Image (cartoon, rainbow, N blue to C red; front, side, top):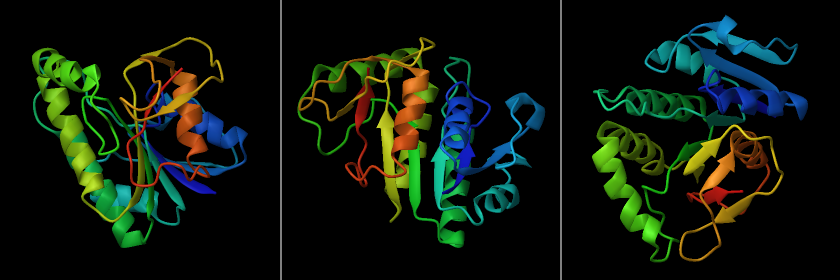
Length: 212
């Protein structure tokens, strides 16, 4: 498949790109500094720019079968503004213009999915986020709403505590209060789950929680 990846220089995004290439896909990325990605490949196209640049975003999305966004908000308490939300809106607009319908992205269980049942995380995590990372929570809500309010075929994986442990290959996914989902997950396994959604049909227009 032809996959466009946003957030490719991040700790999860870089793993997503490598996984896609290993699996034989053709990858386009939008990166501010191409050298920062540290990858070269015949099936990898590096587009220079950032999500705030509508023209660059549309160039990166053109011709794609799927978009994977590994973008996420900064956790700095001093952060202000909503650059990730605005960038996601640009991605959605580009997808609609280029008639790309499949979107795979990230969020956290601070946000709920209609398939969730009552669960302590749905009560505790939003409160913690408001206290510790208020702007990040605003960003998460904004970037997620930018996708879910559209007709896109989206799957947004909710993660809680990513780690740099080696990939275990053990991935739990489902909905809070219904499936047994933990909190910790290796970033390599998060990347593997995102890539698996290229062909996994279990989670159309939903936000499954995932863990090891």
